[in-house]
Length: 197
Image (cartoon, rainbow, N blue to C red; front, side):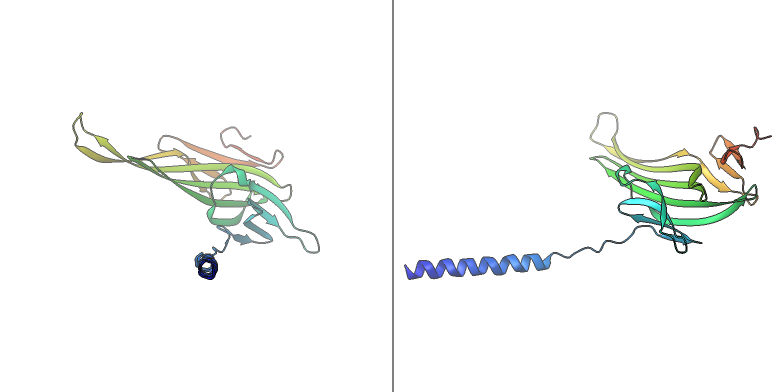
């Protein structure tokens, strides 16, 4: 009886020691913000899961513009916040990227999305938005019913390249199209340069 009791005690103690060691071996990951950029009194950051622009005011509580809610997916990186003047109004440009990798049995998609959004901070309004997607696809395809295969690579582009011009106008470019936008003060939005009068 004593032997069984001692054996049970040893087993219990060794399981306790093993459990403690296992817990210590698990490294805690430090949560760091994937994207922080500061300019003037503005900070682009991930806060409470949402990607936002925090507006700091002297003697006031901070205000914020939510750029992207946490349930929208994707993690922002490579943030850049800057300002420019368009039609005499100071506007702020926020640019960031999001990367995603999708792997299936024979296909890999490496997608890079570049976002460019323009804000009029006084009224907390987004006045322009642009998305440019580059999708690098690698796929293993079989050749004509044989067991032979080959790896094919394609690059697909969607959306427009965003170009901020020195005069505060915006140009969007693709392979087949080019659009120019100018800021209209009374409506607080960018309009087609050809239609503005």
